[in-house]
Image 1 (cartoon, rainbow, N blue to C red):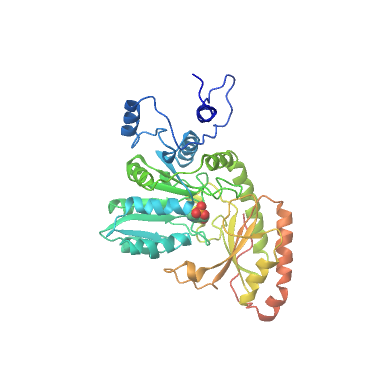
Image 2: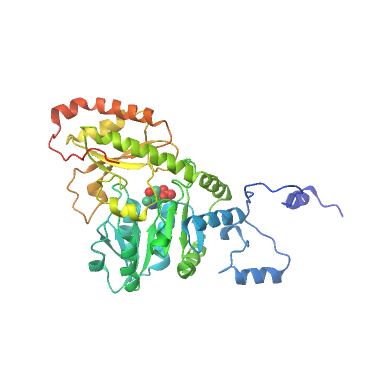
Length: 408
Ligand SMILES: *Cc1c(COP(=O)(O)O)cnc(C)c1O
């Protein structure tokens, strides 16, 4: 019997097996509906899909996403991974997976600011209490409460790249009966490996270095076997998944992660060394620098650095930092980082920290050093310093702190 064209169109193109060799990349499998051979097979798959990773419905992932999950699990050294539409969604789902109303979560003072806003807004409204602890973790023992269920770590922290002693914090939290989740976006799995340092959960904004090309949003969460069930159940409950096209882009980004990070590090260290020689610069934040207060822990726990560094100007003139950033031509002004391109943003540290007294001047300039030629980036920074030379001269504070000459 010959079916009508609409029927034949609806049934065409299902074959994915073609004779020949194997491509080096997984196919992009776009799917909502997945067909079963029988009601019995569907029933059996549904019974197992809570713990086994099965292709049963698009909202539960698909083979392209599964391939990326496996790459992230490899990168993080964990048990299994789930994908989320953004890094922020990953962070929110982690907290909601492990902390119930009436319980308490500890967040670091250096936490990515939207997570701070989540804590002070949604979490508080839903009966989940939060305290912030000093970025170095020194006051964690004093802030643990009987109902503390999760200690969240971000190392190095956002904007000023503070380190905490993750193995020590994890030992304290575990002795207290709390789990430890780390935001590993800075480390991207190659530079920092929280699960090996005692964390139970590691999340990343794949939007940053994993994607690496400023064209995709995604979050990943990898856990130990013990912490897996709650995360996975929450992701299923909220229908969290990502597009296979996006999963493919992140896979493609991960292929070159090591090579890109090596170049980001080389250029960022060159820029940091150059900035240290500038009389306009008061302080540089980069744990890879030997005189950074976080250097010893960075040396112990990190496997390198990336393209991020922040600095403050000696000038107290409020317009100085803004005009400096406005004067940059190769550095774009925009959120995010981890792509191939250089970026500059102004951040107000007095707003971004609540525990630590931010005695430095409030504004830091955060640079993401991209993959452009470093000589061109230095020339751009040089001309931006020229553009603020009159401000420094007329209104600047010449008594600000100076860092020592480079010695690496
Ligand atoms: C960017 C970022 C996030 C959030 O990632 P999005 O994909 O932009 O939501 C989370 N944590 C850190 C440390 C980040 O830098």
